Image 1 (cartoon, rainbow, N blue to C red):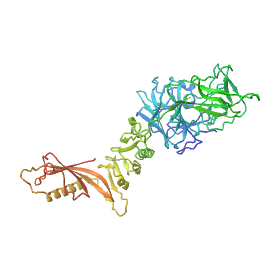
Image 2: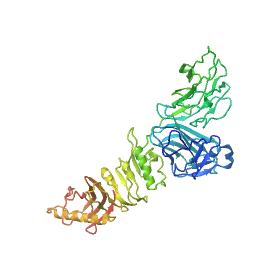
Image 3: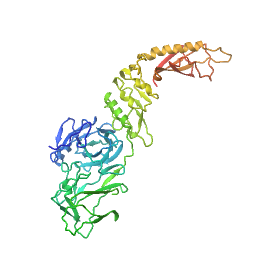
Image 4: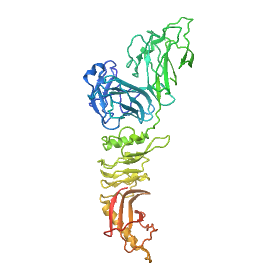
Length: 545
């Protein structure tokens, strides 16, 4: 039995995947094409499965009976691991079928990665809409997203991927949105797989200005486009041989750049003294091709970047690929699929940036992740090494979780990183060198070490106190102490504590903000003038920065 369902983590050029909204990992064999449709459950972790009303089932093939809707979150995305620079035909099908009993046709957007593909417009409750794109993958993954734009709920009936020859459908830039794909026949069947190896849908097209001709002979279709024999064996000629053969298409956008691909083969037996030769023009007589001669029983494909595929420029760059992979692995490791915003590209577009992330957006370069806040997410286990792939990270908040184990020594190489651990973390610091001992950090770090450090500071201040001159004012001092530990030549900042205390025998002029640096290899001190403390010699509180 013919099958297009050979999708694995690494997809090869002879495979593709068809998805339909089933919760169980079952399969469906489409009767007319023998295409195997499988559940989408392995490629998305959100959404609810639904079924169209029974009254519409007779109008549709079985793969259109089910769907997946997305009542939660603004953006919900399918995720595929594929191969960068590969070209795919991507087809989304949408049949509402009053699955929710509301008789209210939804409106929403369809995105490819961080870029808008189209606004989904449904033609009726039972009728479906199909959107098709030819897209070259810029990275080793693909995301197709359903985006909420109003009060109605996005949904999808099926999502299909078909690999194409990279030398076909070449554009100067952007991806291609299919407007029409037609062939000329006196009989009206659609052409799909397995007649078309790539499962393109060819729609029969005839009008009273056209006469269809055909041949029973085999046509050589061995070029990058793999035109199916059913299509190649038919052709159109003008009904009035003294008039030109005219084909019309309408585009939604007048100024949209578009491509038309035309396939020619001479399929009639011409007399020895006959030659078929013609000019091809567009938009009222602008010349495209002069004195064109089709070849006998051999397909020639020509195209012009002017006028049936519309170009979609994907201007928003995707987040750096290594960082996308890291965030997906972090999401999996810590079981964060319940975070509604963690769908699609982590940074782009900015309006759908993942919760807890801040990103930089350099000109003409992929966005980069610069901060990650995972506080209060009930994280357990160890600190994942995937975090080190976020090489531009300057702040990481892991506080108020239940992590354990070692603090990876690689943190020491991230010299700009501000690491926030908090009381919920009880790890050890793993040294890169066996000569450097492992430092145990107790959960009572602020309550024990901070007290010792503050008393040491107080001792130094008392020891170094100057003689008080007349007119100098005794002032309380607020000292902020940042506890740090050294690993080789790098410093790993772990905790900040703040202490307020009186120094009844130490006078500090208001313009003096210096302090003895005898403990600079252990603590970093900042001093400023503050309000008097009303009770006690000193008090301290813990806080993270």
